[in-house]
Length: 246
Image (cartoon, rainbow, N blue to C red):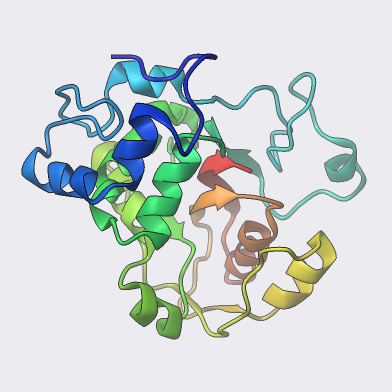
């Protein structure tokens, strides 16, 4: 059942807002795990095909930073200074209702959304993204943040993707060694300075083809800093994927 059309009510009113924000919706997710988290139609994946088809999809973009463009080509910034990443895939736009699902998952105490969101990523990520990949490394959380949240959203999404695509999940080779302040509200330059030295590799990745994974990509600072560390550890190819591009 399709859920989104141009006349759909916006957040705060209507059927979806009630589903996404109410305690009753959370109870339904536990009691009826075979239902779509958006429209409650039966589905084994957690988000039905109709609702998935109506989610805001990414259009033409730069292949190495996912910056939206009028047509698919390298953006001026990447042409002037090539990024650390070889390629980036972001199937969806970070917009309602996907943004509400991700917020409810990451900050709203609803970790049960990991399976439907991970399945959504797996279903709509091009096969080229995981073809020939040796391992997937999700963006790690600092131990302090992991204790606060109780889970790493990127790792959960990666676990579902790796299981469905048959790719090796690596959560040990790279760690977050600095508990950096939130990136929200920072400029691109400030984000880069904030993350410098935040990650460290604990294993050699010589010749490996690595796919990095984050839930949302905003400026790409986090993924590029992680890519820099992975390349320094010897990776021959470093690409990245995020469920949505902000």
